[in-house]
Image (cartoon, rainbow, N blue to C red; front, side, top):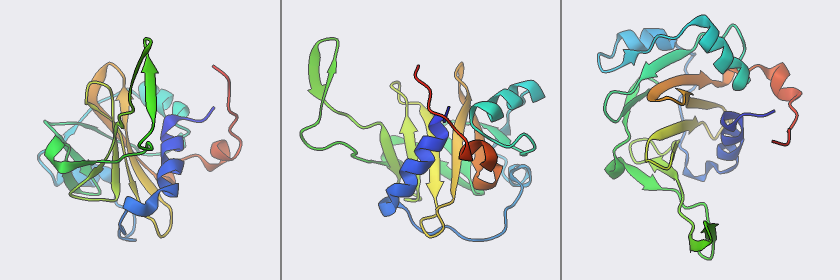
Length: 181
């Protein structure tokens, strides 16, 4: 089974039009980044909870994941605070002008829940139906590597894990199977 994080990563690799170059500097520990920024709160989770997240998102079991709690509408990405306020997001229209959605027997115009950060156009943001952050992905279009920020706990809309390309378990990704649900 492939996770939504992996699918979003593949999707964003294909639509690199909105992305800009990110630096190729060596990977820095996200734990180190946290200590340099007072606005970030480290969220605590047990090893069992993190292991469950790693399995669900095809992350290597030894990956050292950075878990943050959003403070207001700020998110730490690559040691930079990114605003999630509506005025700092540009709608990413993924539907054609003729697209329609039918829900409960009513036809409506299709509305995208994907946005691009005006601060950093390389970041694409997915919001849930309540307007809360569900996931954010930053793409390097030259090498296709992504950094994604995924919600760790569906019960807490403000807790997120940062996943880099190096964190993914390449063996699991190479042998995934799509299951019917």
